[in-house]
Image (tube, rainbow over all chains, first blue to last red; front, side):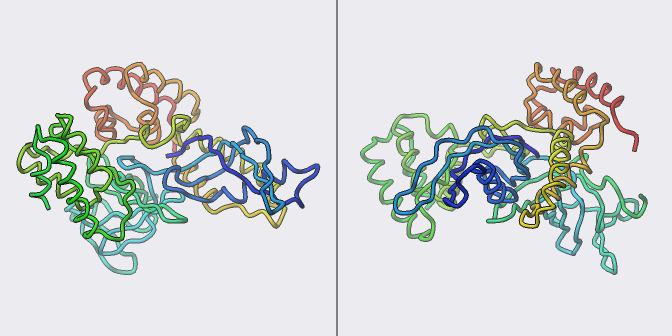
Length: 176
Length: 220
């Protein structure tokens, strides 16, 4: 789920960036440091939308670096347990399938796939119902519910389920 | 372990006695999980256990030292002795507890509008070879495009869904409803279990809102 949030960060700037373009340099460094990162609390920082406030700089003892506290607004993407979202399947194997929703990777175990769907191996491995009416394969769109999240240094990984009501395939790429 | 947990938390136990026991208990738990730090795995206890002051004190000491394994064992020990086994609650969305108050939940359509505006600016920035557009931005924009295009006008969707706020639906639940694009009220209650408690109150306003949203749906 996307959120618009205000965050604060202490930015260190080398004296070579001081001068007329101090603020621009500070903002460019902030964008370089923050955009694309991820944390457990806020999720992925997708984009910075604006700077609210740049505080007074503090010169660090011993070095010439100056620390500025910067308050900025940004769009973050954070998955939550219990959230319903739509994802695109990227890989299918006998343990389950992997899907992607934005920058987040999701795994759905075969235990959390409805019992009437069976794994079919082959060139295009897939999960299919016994009557062949519903198929989950690479590039299928599925609606799933997140039941767990794990945060690494650079990405967020989730576990999902399609075993509840109103979950499962939305769009089959073969019929589209 | 469970037995020790059971003995340590009976009602009406004197605090001095429990504190000495809990220090013994804590050292044992440290042995079991040596690699983990003392800080911060919060353990939820059943409300039925911590009814007396002395039990509360023991609980707070347990909170400091208890780790995942030990906490679970205590819980089962107590559950076996005192509380009946509860049915597992359906997984509910609890955004407000985990994010700071200033966080504003956005519908995918609103996020798409903002990210597209930023992308237009990025076209100018991308001429500078030192500036790299992060992968998460591309993926976020692609995702927002695929999920945020259900409706023709996101601002009207927002104003329609705002009507549900007075019935007790919070921001996060509104966004889940907008993103999921449900067709029936039953679908809403299945996808957002936290609304089931207010089903009787919400069902009529929800049907009205869904019928209005159908008019705004984009033809695919």
